View 1 (spheres, one colour):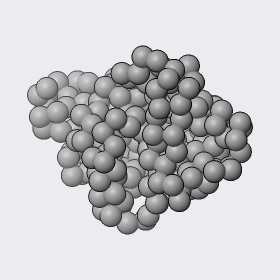
View 2 (tube, helix red, strand yellow):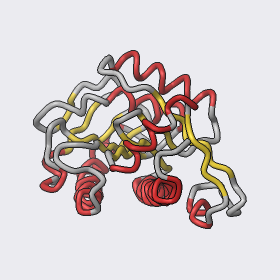
View 3 (cartoon, helix red, strand yellow):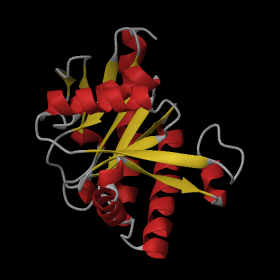
View 4 (cartoon, rainbow, N blue to C red):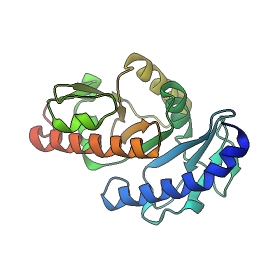
Length: 212
């Protein structure tokens, strides 16, 4: 995908990310300024549409979406990109993702803390697992890694890279006491993964509580 095509795709990606972000806010997954979202608008060179930092997701519009390069520099839009830009870039590169979505739900925070000592949690036997790309049976066992959160984004991006390499079949990961990251080939698939994983985390939490 060339750069000129990326410039054409940016407005559409920005509008869709804003729409998805507002819908997540309405579902209680990105209250206040929490959460961040990105989508690839060009591969060569790599360009991302990504949410601007410190924006109320209930008021998110296309004007709050920036275009950045592969080092996080802003090429289009006003504001500064999400503090977690390096994590988005790491997922895009290692998973060849077309979109990366990050939520801060109640259940992702509770379970990421409760299961942190195990390094993750396994979810299996639920029909909803079939909503994850490549999963065709409820008998699938989905391992959701948990990564210790850090304000050092370079270090945290390194932990994300190591985790994705260690768990190549994972569809997402949790940052402890922070939230859920997932991705997809495009925004629609990433949105579906958020909905599936948030559903499963809530079922897991409501069924077993915070017990390990």
